Image (cartoon, rainbow, N blue to C red; front, top):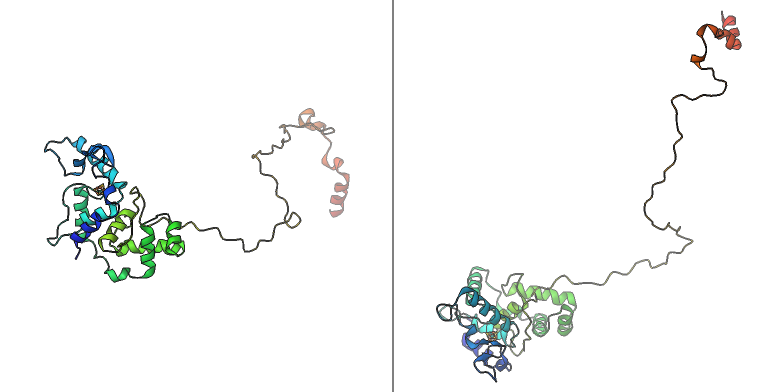
Length: 282
Ligand code: SF4
């Protein structure tokens, strides 16, 4: 069972607890250290005075959540506030805690109740998972996580994805949510978590691998490979077509319309050789 009291203690005894965003400012005690425009009750419940206009409330909550995302103890804060008490309720059912409104945290609780149960803690006991988780608590660039954990990038990314699944989180979970869930299960003891702006995904994008080397690096010489013409803009070649008139005069040709048919010589006079062959055949 989650121990809310122990988680609250871990939050309050964190070495950077006094630097939390919602702490009273040293010079202006009525204002929040993370944003002097906010009073200390900016993190309070849904409706501060019973008549807060919706737009004002939304602006106030957005500004408070913004401070949470830069808070040094956001992970520990979320782990405590969202832990479940012996009565089965949120440890902090009202107000903004760990960068989430009460409504968002209640919705997450309902989703978690309907989701598949998370893996038992012994599934996290492998040294590699612990090393990746500890590295991920401090840095979030995939290459830096791999370097700190002493594994290659693919293994580190796979373990990040694996941890997300084991903690019962959706694939769209952020790094902060993963670390909060891990802290809630006591997996981040003695680890100082470095907060991010809330936009870092728990499951990293696909690894960028270097291009494969060319298996046959023999250079192509000009003698072995014919040079290709330089590419240029396409210009169709226009070949002039011979002009054709319907009627063409040829020297020596007798045009039919220039002579009367009666003036024409008989065919056998025009072709005497053919005429001789016809007579022989007859
Ligand atoms: S994360 Fe928690 S401790 Fe930090 S500013 Fe937000 S409410 Fe305060």
